[in-house]
Length: 232
Image (cartoon, helix red, strand yellow):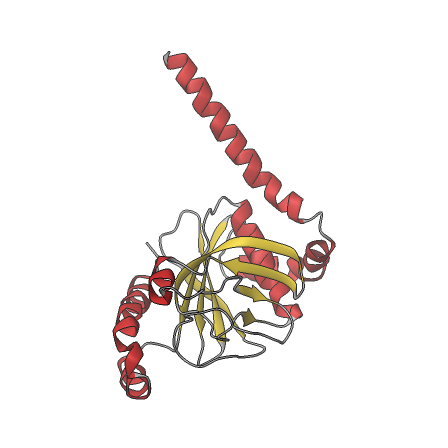
């Protein structure tokens, strides 16, 4: 019985590792992904090594709607804390500050999410879908259709997504593929209305008092990451 259990665990581990190692190869069968690697990977890999990141790393994204910025944070597999790699600007904006509550409201969501789909054949070049709506979004939307299909994508248009240029999404997509290929099951994505300092909170809750309670909960997530540089 002990031998059988050990064999089953070994087979499960083998298939898990094989799936991880094959993920990048599967993605490279798509022309846009292959082209992105050909154009970007050599310089990007050199930059990673220069900043102390090894071949196996984990990825985390922090987005700020009012600034129109996405921060790329990485950590080596044996590290507890993330470090900032670089920041990319949004290429377009839609909606106003505040969470997304229904389909076609043009709002970009706010909250804690993770990437749940890689789309190498997107209408917007390459794209990474986040798991909107999450449980909080569904509760907030009530009987309304909360909408779906929120992506970080290329091009310079948006109706609630986070758009980067085609050039920038190539780098973000590659980093996400590398993280997934290293075994990262969930790539966390935090989307904030703004940098949630005391000053910004005071100013923006005067303008949007209806979001004060929700933003207070987001501020806890913001403060925790800024203090500990971890999403756990």
